[in-house]
Length: 243
Image (cartoon, rainbow, N blue to C red):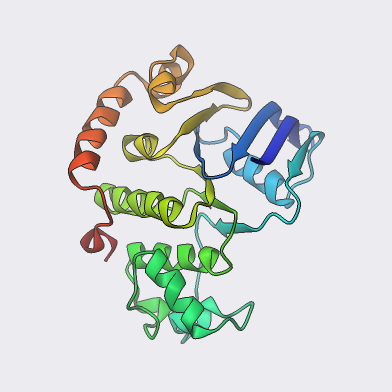
């Protein structure tokens, strides 16, 4: 079942066109990753999908009653503000604490409910943002460079957790990433964006595409193979890397 259909999408800010003629689909249970250089329109595409940016042309179609969970690129919390993880998870809706616990479990950080948000490590903070996106059991999870600022083991651990979320909940996942070393193996399909769709397909197809290599170099193919080797031996969440 197709959940999101993007057709001939163009996004412009004033005279600056950042996306043109973008076609994209996302189906139930699928993991699709968008990669591309800085300024390639990745975040603008996500903003158009959630309705935060109005397209200059083209359209975005969502399946009826589609529930979307969103993990932002970053979120600033005032370091002087006392707020527990439980309170943060219930800021917009007074969901039961049992649902908060379930979401934290799904995000791989089951014991953080009473911790202060300001005391979390970078990896834990991102897992809490993931938990917040999962609280209302979304059909689609959107992630905008959710591992920015994490080291490579932390990023790899986060993406393994995303795979587990898909396995456990069946939700579709559309994510933007700059972590070429770890993200492609976690994806069913990769879309390479640079103002338009340069190439798309399975990770292996995209990694060998001339358009992809022109943007990122041929060395990323070897990195992908290395990650697959590590991934095969460590399939499952690495709690240590998340902390």
